[in-house]
Length: 434
Image (cartoon, rainbow, N blue to C red; front, side):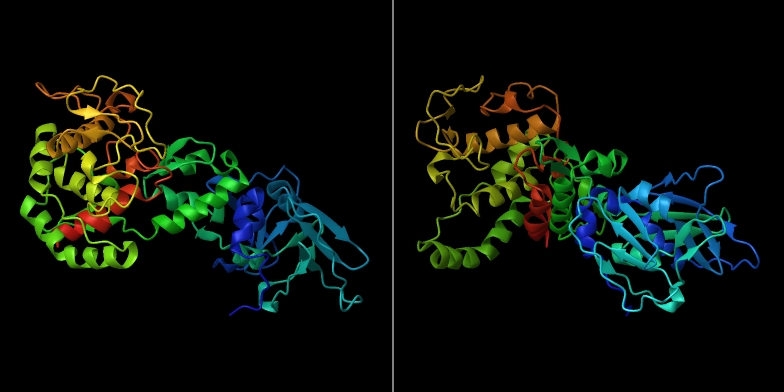
């Protein structure tokens, strides 16, 4: 274990927009195995988040000497947005990151020392001898070994020996890259919906400090779910590739068997948490499989979504069982006035009744079909299949074709719904396949 004192931890690094990205992370360079050079400092190229750090001609660049990497303070200041001050009387380098101006500068315990001390946000860094010491070069520039700071920020560093290039991923970039791997829709604080795969190209600069903090929460939530899932036939597919359109994998009998196994647990939960008996689970599995196939929608996954939305058909939310509304259509948190438009849906099959939350469907079969139609609206821009009657009153309000994968329903069907699609797949559907 190192005796280094971290800045404020990695979390603070994420909150400080410039701090997390910039060349302060170059400290990890001291960890890279590079050949020592006798008699001369060896220049290296540095890429932070795949962007080269440019050093003006004639200025002091980063270099490796004696197997350690040194970086000029000016580079730190310009790339971090940090304030850097040199105090000659105490031989201290005072670094104050952006947004942190209230820290007092500690005095040195041994003022007569010739060593240079680094102070970041009011805290002195205690650097082991093996890390190397800050120094002043022949050009009069102060350079510092930043391995200690890089460790505190958790940068990822790779050394490319053939080109003498150091590739660094800052914690902020690594966060965006981790989120990108989920290829999942996210709702930003400003209301925009983006697919996480787009985040690295957008870059940290595109987001506020508060948004970067929110991204950390997103990563924690998404990390609970697997990137890959194994199907009964042994094939492995990526969670993000599971489409809304397609053939069902689970049969109606499998779905029924799964619910039968869950029934005792749900009955106990209803008595314990809600003080009432369990509502008998309606026999809808075959309807979902059949109607889903008619639209080319995966009926087994739609059924799993209905389980999630209704709490195993116990309707513990605002929608009532008699509404035959299995996916919360038009349940927005506000009761209906009865004056809302059906938007072309057949009034003989669906109604919007004042005082209720969500649409009311004339039969279970129509309720299932409306659910399938809503998924169809998200997954494709195609018109309804020939001969089909529109029962979904929000079909024409959906951005058609905006969610072809289940994880793309995140932040659209459910808000914020950060793990909505993942939960449908892993918490419900996969259990029916076991």
